[in-house]
Length: 491
Ligand SMILES: O=C(O)CCC(=O)C(=O)O
Ligand SMILES: [Mn+2]
Image (cartoon, rainbow, N blue to C red; front, side, top):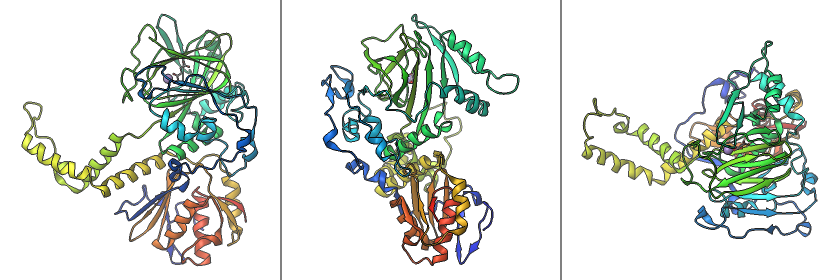
């Protein structure tokens, strides 16, 4: 085996990976597929491993659900008092402990998507203090600050201290660097004591558990997902009222926080809005305790305040691709084909109106392309590639697997983590599998094996279908282990 830059013919098969060229090859796509877990999802095919007889029906406090919040209450609160820990019973290594279903329970993902997603807040009150065990606790925040923030000092990526006053004013400071180059954690403790909220951004890159949660939601929703952590002292408010441009799931991890949420002035806005108003008119109040989940669609103005206890919450943001993004991709594809779209706007174009005859000619071409099913599918898969490119491998026992590949045989068992999104591209010349910001490409003969891999989470090397010889199968799997798609469970 060569090093990671390896790109050579091995027993007639040439495999390439990210290290040997910068991006996956993009010739005409013949076939594309995405992990079956995600595809089955909207049809309600997600596994539901639970004893239904133990499940109490949700107690719905406010049934006046209003799509797009045209009238009535702006959201819904769902209460459950079920002290069971059935999710722990299947927290084995190869099923994600964190899923959309788990995050919303007892509301089903199907109900959520139909009734709340992009339209109305949903508050799930669980009365189950340990529901989020496994995610960061109050005691983990010190480590997150001193170890992980210190290692990501430049740039700090938005980490900050913030305090808002009831009159709508607020003060803000960045995290300071101490003399030894680490984060000045004493300054953070002092600020916290003075009422400042500590905001730790991009926690999905800093905590393996939060990373798994976000990746699992990406698999369910097919949109990029990231998380920030907010620690607020008692009797304080962090941000002033504002609008986020992404939907959020708020997971209350410690203490209590009171959320004030009011209707959007712009539905599903494209930009955040931090316009200061004295306060929120006609707000709905949600009091979150440990184990509760609040979903807020983008556009709903909100603020959050603590009472007598401090509060730690994780905000998981869904940075959804929009229809606009799809059409942008189609326009990029048209421009690749049609020189007209690659031409410059006329010199001095600001001085007079554009030639509308010319514009209409281009619009006719664009409009034909925008309703061409093949182009729309291509554009969709370009978005999928973007999603996968932003993903990162995390939380695997990679070194153990790398140690194990030496003895790999047809009987060895390997697995793909349930939180991994992957795509297979097929062209006349090669087959490529894209995953977690990486890819492996080889001859078209590996296509059946790759398609099998995206449909099966756990398999023996010898199960791989197609015409590959035993040595080719083993080599392909070894490559997928070294590049981070597969883990070796048993050699
Ligand atoms: O806790 C806060 O001050 C605000 C948090 C927030 O706006 C959010 O999580 O989106
Ligand atoms: Mn917010």
